[in-house]
Length: 80
Image (cartoon, rainbow, N blue to C red; front, side, top):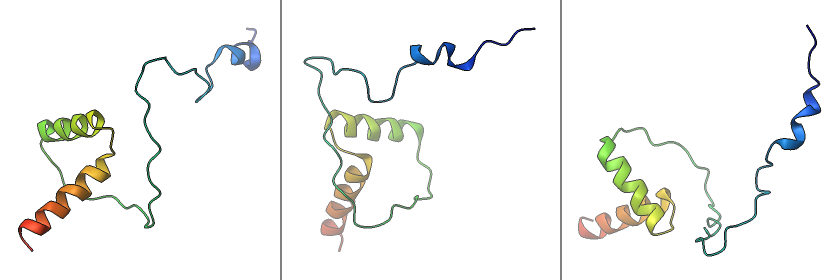
């Protein structure tokens, strides 16, 4: 049994970040630097809420963390 050289198909693979941008497609801005270390939150949500949350963030071109922060700030103003 003859093995094919590993480098044979290496030139056919796409390189991350090397693709050209599609003209007219919306471009995401780089996230703002975060001063604190990020740690996981440990709670579960219904699948429908998770989907709505992610769609909202993507539609408004902001991160999920930013959606959560802004929502929490509004809640704290409403109920100090």
